[in-house]
Length: 355
Image (cartoon, rainbow, N blue to C red):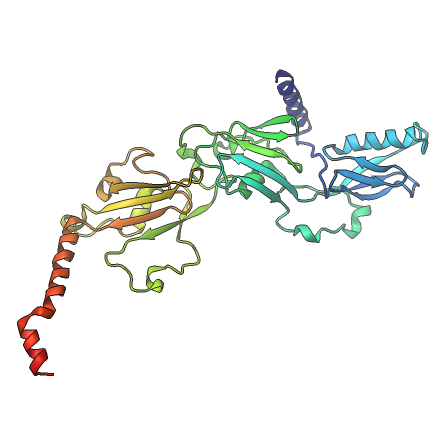
């Protein structure tokens, strides 16, 4: 274990000295092998699904997980060892032409853990072509193949995430990734990813309100369902059952109390409305259990001092408000009156003789 972390520290030091992390090749990447005055081995190659390039007379050459300098050294050794070139005469270079989309896995304290495809948002993965000027212009900057974009692809980190101790698992290697600077403004040494990488976001064990705001690794907004009906709706249209937007949008970081205000559950005549109650319904993504939090509205908006009293809103939460005792009593008497009104003797007499 100690040896692995020493290796990781060495890689970190190398990446820092170079100013950027070197990116290993993955399946689908395009590279160009250049050899002066040579037509058999020079050319453009695509890394196949097995992580190799098909080189004439050499067959498959494994390059997956290697950087450009390592591929140059490997090809140089193969071509000279097999007698195609004298060792002191071969001039060979490997240059990147185009980085391909990659599949990575994200686990831990994120909204939607799982496997995701990270691709250039401006270039669909099924339309990758070699640019015509590739013979004169080489190099490609994969701004989208970084850890931050992988976290964005799974919906971002939860407010319980330990963003300072994220780990990138690459085969037997573990690379630490500190993204706390996304929230503090400090420098962020993000890591470019290759196919098969796995990001693990550990839990800090508690809700951190500082992480509950829009950022590069958190959602800009969330959808929440809201209901504030004194009387059940008479149609799907008026009750928003057919709403394709799945509720209303709140900025990420909004709290239970703000949703209650947005639902018009707060305000009005104090003596009539002050004792209204609100509930927050949340489905636990890990267990599937439905969790219900009920709070008096006035207590929620006036006396909430913790994350437990006034929790942060999460995607697909549901908020509902119940009327006050005064309103309930009024509606009970109104219902009794509506029920008895057809039994009024005057109305019965009128209906019988004056139709």
